[in-house]
Length: 349
Image 1: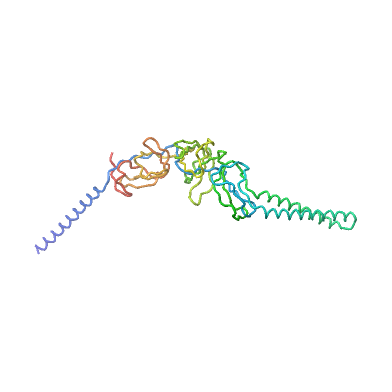
Image 2: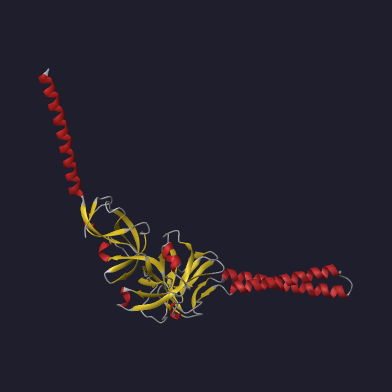
């Protein structure tokens, strides 16, 4: 009986020692996985925001030109890239069909004129009734309107340039049959210096901009030249293809050389509206892009959390964060390279 009691006591002590040893090992593992980091408290302040984006050059007067009446294209006198002048003949359609229509209407007008003259004489001789005279007058008026319409259509058997500019696209060829309104040429008014840069922004960036806000534009094709611009228009609806809101930046100098439609450009836009933001060290930023990046934050000084942030103006060794840190109390500025979302941390000074 005594031996059994000793065996039971030995088993209990062994179990307690094993549990204690396991706890110590677990604590050692936890301590080993805890990553030392440095943090900085966040203070919200007013800051000048800078929006960095990109887009393509175009003009605000691009136009699709077409024939009012369909037919066989007689000839297209220009090709893509040609410079054009206002009023210049660009294309013509075979006039045979519309010419025949004009001739038919002219014959109808002559007949209506004869019928009216005859009815007028008969009415004076009390042979024709007033109703017959009025009917003849109505037929004459209709014929006159028809000849005006036919001559108007005859004047649109040719396409002429509506402004000084360039041919951007040639959408048809000689001998091709086109319907009324089918685009044949696309032109712009680049010769008049109406260049703009079209960019797409997020809803938050779009909301802080106002028409007239200053911007600068650069392009590799301009050999380092920086162009001054301003916000000229804000789109009132989202682009379904890109999911962004469009903004147009008009160049202050309309006589810039070396630009072409579709040329890529980078822009920095400076909203006049002040915005509340946080300023963090640049080293705290991970995977930074033009307008967004990631940082690690902590609210309990024990756990790291990775969050996406919207970026503003870049300062010396610092960067402005305009969104994403609203619910954070501190941002991790050292040790981020060893962290993952949910990592255990230990704050050091």
